[in-house]
Image 1 (cartoon, one colour):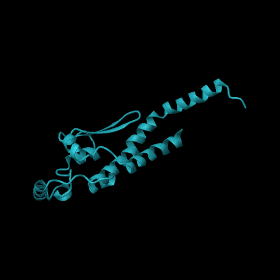
Image 2: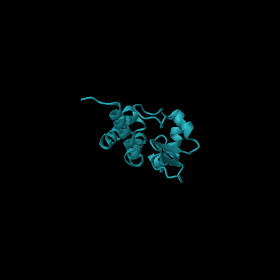
Image 3: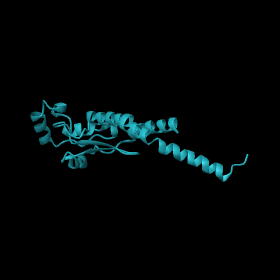
Length: 152
């Protein structure tokens, strides 16, 4: 069987049409299952002090650790968990709703979680909460790949 250039062009056009017609479902995928995977991974990250992502966050200095345990014993994490003094940063990342300093921005092919908590850049420089380890990335990629295989 001989494949002509016209047949090849038609097949490419059909694939491109399929890709452009899935923009709305892709947004739904990102806002739904991908966001839920992100949220679960962020929950696990904070609960494990980042061990789920490959390495534990650097320990707090002794003086601050003692102060925090004393003054925030009734707060999130009982004053013992890092990055959970008031819970504001955590909430802005896990439940981004605009009013808590977090935003969930779903684009055509991207999901961005943004925190407007003013101290977030300083905290992130010392204890990175913005990059994912291989297991988390593979899980999210698996969700996207599975969806694309079913839909295209």
